[in-house]
Length: 334
Ligand SMILES: NC(=O)c1ccc[n+]([C@@H]2O[C@H](COP(=O)([O-])OP(=O)(O)OC[C@H]3O[C@@H](n4cnc5c(N)ncnc54)[C@H](OP(=O)(O)O)[C@@H]3O)[C@@H](O)[C@H]2O)c1
Image 1 (cartoon, rainbow, N blue to C red):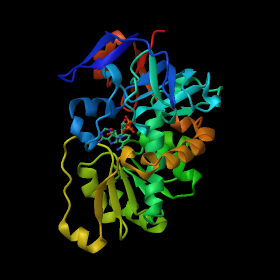
Image 2 (image 1 turned 180 degrees about the horizontal axis):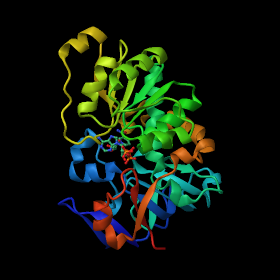
Image 3 (image 1 turned 120 degrees about the vertical axis):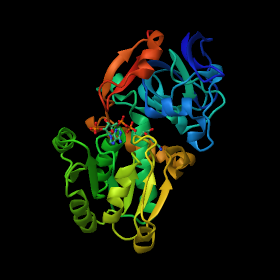
Image 4 (image 1 turned 30 degrees about the vertical axis):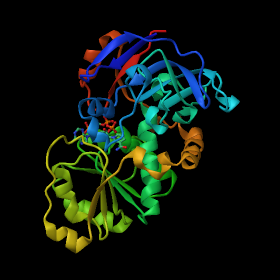
């Protein structure tokens, strides 16, 4: 069985591993169709501590957190309706020492890491989706519990931004999406997203301040960091919290005058899906997956595929960044 595994020096190599054939209780075997390479797959390979301490393990050191495929076998205790279904998978939803990670031809995961896809969608179109959808879902749960009524997403045209826009609309939570280009704004508008502001707009601060005050968007879903936070912070309503969940802005520092913290009771903290109450509590996770299953065919949740690669092309796939916002996808051969 072909798999892409991580070496002790944190490089990736293609290996032959034993075929999993007898799933333990609560686990399923999945014949993998494809795996999108998400930012986390790269970040945690290079910087394992970026997870905040949790290092996902896999038998045979198979790498990869996202994918999709078809359930081939159920272990004891798995509900029968999973059998034969196509599923989107996010490995970090459930931790298990019996996991055989996703960048291989047949994965073994707890069934609670899988979301059943409807028969009418193409499995591959959701090979990177579940991580982003569950992140946006868990975030909306968390900010609701903390009393926020509206949200600003800084990486509006990212997969997590799209997931947030769609899920917020379904809950009637006002959302403002910030994007870097007119094309990105038009794409979101085509999906009926109402409040989209260009970060290049000379009057970003004024427009955002007015709309944020009107809509009460006190939670910031920040996938970028960097100077954008410094630009928008003065426009945020009182009692806003900036939740940093992504690092698209790279190492650019965040710079803010201290007086903002005093004036606005501003807070900055991290958000991590696998530290969220949605993912950590099995009952919450079950409820989330049940709520997401009937809506997962939303086109806003689809993985934007840039290029497909065979396992043997793993180096090129990891380097692929040709079209921003699209993902490299590893395609299992069998
Ligand atoms: N903490 C968690 O639980 C969690 C979960 C999932 C993802 N993440 C993280 O969230 C971030 C976003 O992931 P994703 O998969 O949603 O991203 P993605 O789909 O690859 O989105 C990339 C797009 O974001 C936009 N963008 C905005 N500001 C950017 C900037 N400063 N640099 C680069 N692109 C920027 C760009 O759109 P335009 O080209 O249209 O401007 C770019 O095409 C990543 O850092 C990822 O690791 C964290």
